[in-house]
Length: 288
Image (tube, rainbow, N blue to C red; front, side, top):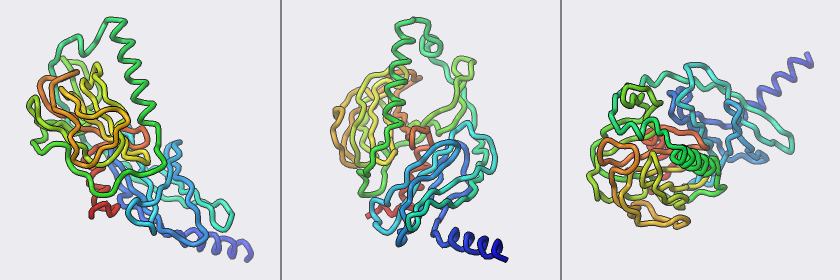
């Protein structure tokens, strides 16, 4: 009898927590959103998923709501994955669990022909450069700024046709080299590229693979990236407004022609930028 009473009390306290999982079914390479209501005597700590500890933040435009973004790796296989919410209630650490269903996003495949030097570089100097640039970028992406720079909804960095979607398997010169890590927009050389939202510019650099690169930190683990640019109009550590000119499009780096590669990272994980934007714009009340 005492055991049943304990179970009832435990379940009651568990479901007293107001949690809303916006998309509990999510494809690989996509992002899930969890919203938590502000409640008396409850302090949200984190969300645990696949060994990662994901911070919970207050909605930047709703003081009565908290949220967490759960990025799902492109390489995740279809499965039901447990998610744990850690919180403190009246000084006691508690947990709430739910299941995230990972689906196969069924990405397509495309073949691309570029210079062999861009597919399998042999120069030790180039290899060292690539490794250094990768390490530099990963350090940025895994840095979570504990504040949000967002005040309104996201926009696209350029208004043009999408020529290659996120997640497409890439076969370079007959060799499979992973997947397309962003969304490509048609943009002839010299097309103005603007910031998708407010934030801090954390990288402005010409890189081996991504060419002219700008990365913006929007705060709270959200980053957007702009690749293959020909000219820069911003500098590192500069704060930019949504729609502010970042520079001009180009065909630098590993490309077959001029375009803008637009990508996003959440807590260090590469995710579909357009799905992320739609998720944030439609569910975090970022519109004014």
